[in-house]
Image (cartoon, rainbow, N blue to C red; front, side):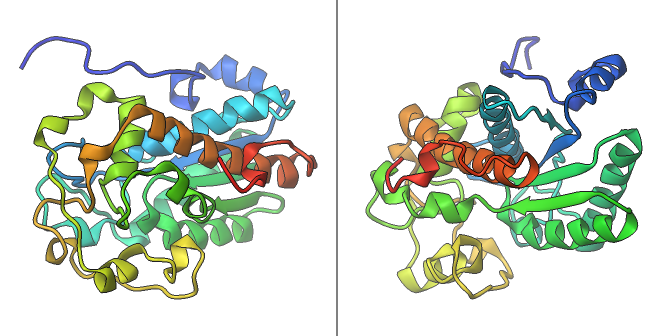
Length: 283
């Protein structure tokens, strides 16, 4: 173990990196907060356990920059690094919290920020397993306050429509595969170990239930509860991470951030005509 810089993080700063007076100044121009939801769970030997947490912050960071340029200032909230990851518990290093804890934690964080002056919250995930808890928490926050607004943003639906134009793989990629590995190559290349990456695909029927086009998280109408990811992969990931590249990661992040920015600008800033690439069929 050496004393060295592990990775560099780009701005703008999120709330924990700001001072109290800096937040007060920001509240003079916005009451909108983007809250990133991550997880700590296995993504194979080639990716860090914090992959989802890093992705969630980058989704918010890029969306915040686009919104700022469009005259829609926001604040990035603290990244929540733990999520509902029970189906990854078969892999070492995974930390999972219950839905009850997740909902209570989210609610208390937002109520605290509400008391500090924020009124509009946008929940952005980096781990789709958090989506059900995010939606319940959103409703409970609205129920507990006289005027808070909360939206839950599932960018997977927008990305799934154009993923075939970004990825090289002709098979359906999944958790820790070509797509996620590409995105971490953008934000934390120092933590990616492609020399340890292996290709592992699962049968189409299994993949359809995990995250196929019928799955509710990618725009379908079916939710399949997962018992154990280890029954699908001995490695902790699904797909071919050796196909990953920084360019693919940037293109995917652009689609995600543009969709998030468009929704927030429309619903929280009354700018329905924000010109972003997500309105087009190609990224």
